[in-house]
Amino acid sequence: MDYETPQFFRVMQYAAGADRDVVDMVSGNPDWEPPDALREGLRAYADGDVSEFQYPPSVGLTELRTEIAERRGVDRSRVVVTNGAGEANHLATTGALERARRSSSEGPELIMTDPVYPYYAGRANLLDADATYVPVDETGQIDPADVRAVATDETAAIVVNSPNNPTGAVYPPETIEALVAVAEEHDAVLVADEVYDHYDFTGAFESALSTGSDHVVATNSFSKSLAITGLRVGYAVFPPEDGPLGDLVERARTRHMLQNVTGSRPAQAAVLRALRETSPEYYERNRERLRERIDRFTDALDAAGAEYTTPGGSFYVMARFDGFPGTMANVERLIDEAGVAGMPGEAFGESRADWIRFALVTPRVEEAAERLAEYLG
Image 1 (cartoon, one colour):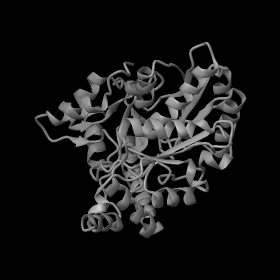
Image 2: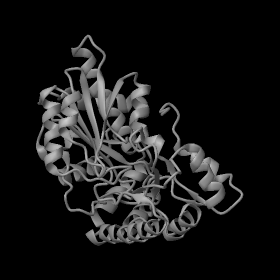
Image 3: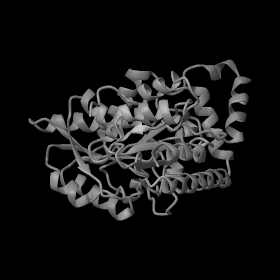
């Protein structure tokens, strides 16, 4: 698959140009309300003193970093607030690659899963890094033994995402611990993207930070958990400065400043208020909303005779329809002829090339499934 060109916008643009009604199940934009405190935080910010409209600290508002650090059980010095989880992942990956290049004459490599979130693979291309893809099993789980089999002393980072996009798999603690052990053995970094941590339906999710390893960078954002993908507030938790990988956080601070200067002050202020004032019930309501959508969508897929994944986390379902592989051409046919827009499985790698990924962030999931059943059943 060509990872040089992101496919998400290609599909969305094609769907936008369709001459019929289309149910959008392409990107992970939550369709539900952010917490009340988030909106209140933005309103309060608008009425603030003029000094509040100036540059915040480059690494993020101190109070927000403190709140994140307390929630993650780490020292605040390890937290860098970023422009979404995308930048957090970029800082973690580039830091790992730079570190590997300083210590080896060979070209460093990244290990990723197949299927893979395409932006990880695209980043490897952008950074001119070799990438090795380890296929997951039929349930979306990664076998650490398979990762160990391909890891070498040239491995700079192992990049994982749990709860996973696109498979919905939630890696159990023993998997994360085993992957951390592989990273430690080869003096590599486990880059753990945990952006869907609030959408775990299994109860099995534990942050990679819980391993206590100096070889972990955990990345996250509030885009999904607070339904604010447009505010672009993410963060990375780097290893301690006094540990063996302590230079990663300082390099990340420098790169973040050179690339962005800083992040959005009003967005960070609103997120801080939301974190402090939003009750656990908000998150549980949204998990329940997604449980119901998963049930409705997969019931209708059953009627269509489709094979599909049942997510343990995140909000994506992958489906395979007999005789209708997940190519870009077939995704365009679904838009034109069935009025449903999904993502081609081939965009995520070879192992799920026959599948199509659907994002359950629309109240029209049942209608979409019925359209699929009528067209493909």
